[in-house]
Image (tube, rainbow, N blue to C red):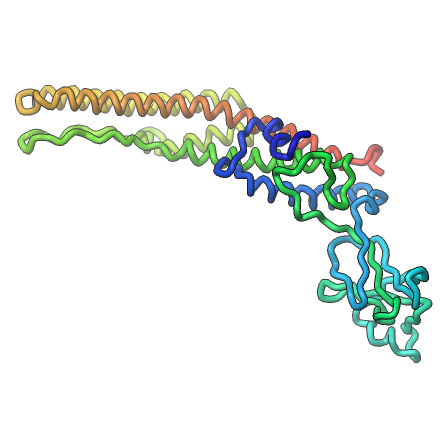
Amino acid sequence: MATFETQVEALTGIAIDGSSDPTQTELSAFLVDGVKDVVNRMIEARPAELSKFTATSNETDAVVKTGKILSVVREHDSTTILRKCTAIDPGDRYDATDTDSLNYRSKTSPGYYELDGLIRTVPAAGSGNNDVVVTQVSYDTGVVFGDTVGSGIDNFPTEYEHLVGIYAAIKSIGAKMGAIRASLSSFSVTAVPPDMPTTATSIPTYEDPDTDDAGGRSISDEIDQMLTYIETDEDVELASAKGVEINLRFKRALDQFNSDIAKYKTENEGEVSHYASEINSYSADVSAQVQEQAQKIATETLRYQWLQDRHTAYTQEYYSAFVVPGGE
């Protein structure tokens, strides 16, 4: 059977490992968060489903609060005699022990209160078959990426497990989109110019198209705008047009570099003739890197757009699962 990792990979098209975006560790965190989110949304939309997400525990003192409470009972000198506890204000916990108070609670009519993350009863729970017994929502915080789908999340019905996978897919797509956005804004040419003779004019170097002479917008600004057209405006035409503009800016910068290189060769022909091959190699290396970046932008933009579409579709599917027919 499939694991949560393979399920999310199938939904997102992302290959997940120890160093991917997201990592396997991050995916496990998404799954744990997904369990909590599904439980909370489901019991909010369908209160009758509460009992499917609960666990029962008993203590001779107090029970740690883990989630929404379904029931609290107190043993009455026997494990088979369970008295229902009704909620009382924590401020009344002393009066509830005072036989002269209207708020007094007895073994046959006990109460419970929540304080400091604990659930306690009045009369106080104790040894001798007088435990406090609490049934409450209990989240499985041990779900990990390698767990088998359908093998059972603790205190969680199998019919809702697919929603946990969808939640993790949505978060995984968000992580991947963030990584793509960062990678598109981190381009730089790494080609190193050859050493020049001391009598020669400094060799031209490629300058990234950081700022547009007309608009004053950096190339990173333009990339951010293109991604905004995709994820916020959902306008493919504007995104495509902006992608063309970005590629043109790279081309203008590359053309200027090639022009400067040609002038340099002419002005320094005598002094640097033996450097011609190194200059040509440097120029070709710059051109290759710029073209590679332009192709990367085109490819990653399509990938980003596909992920955005998946993110929108899965988000709609996820939230629709908590809509009660007829608004009931």
